[in-house]
Length: 212
Image (cartoon, rainbow, N blue to C red; front, side, top):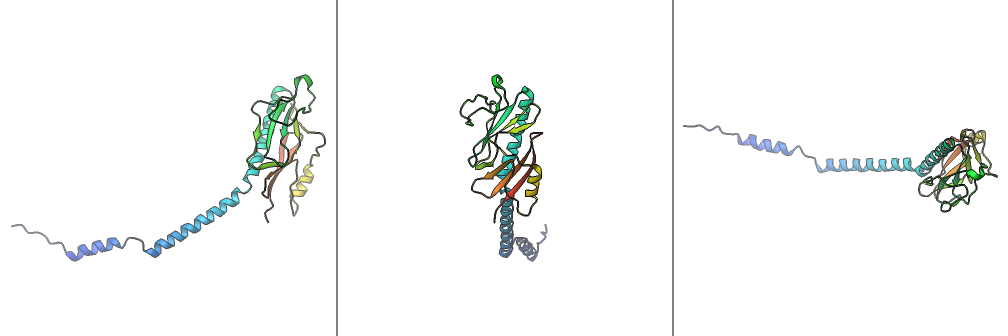
């Protein structure tokens, strides 16, 4: 005759009951949700601070790249090249042109319109736009890059000296000055660039946030 071993009923009930105690209470869930919301809010605030004025910073990087491209083209062809800038306070763009071989005078001869052919022809695929709503507040009409890398500005443009740039930027209230000043339209963000005439490179840059 077989004997079956009886399972203690009380023990089985306690096991099921103890398994149920492993979940979260409503209060604990609410606390976790509140913490997640607070962390998300803090992250959004930090990211918004980080991305403020990024358009101006990106525009400065584009200007640097276009300068480098123009220098490369001038050195490769042994001919002056020009960087033409869009009018101030409009969506910004730049275009590289090469000096007309039949009239190589180191002076840009064109109408500043990227949609038309100039006497000094444009380098193919050199038209470059700045990020949306980023404009040149201050810039030369054009910059000439010599085969040696030396750069010159259009007649009438007043180059800013490095000492003056440093004095303004290191002062108590920096203001937008420089050979090139990029501004995010309708926003208080500017990027100020100082160009080294001898090398044709950006010598210094400074970001200004004029938010009250």
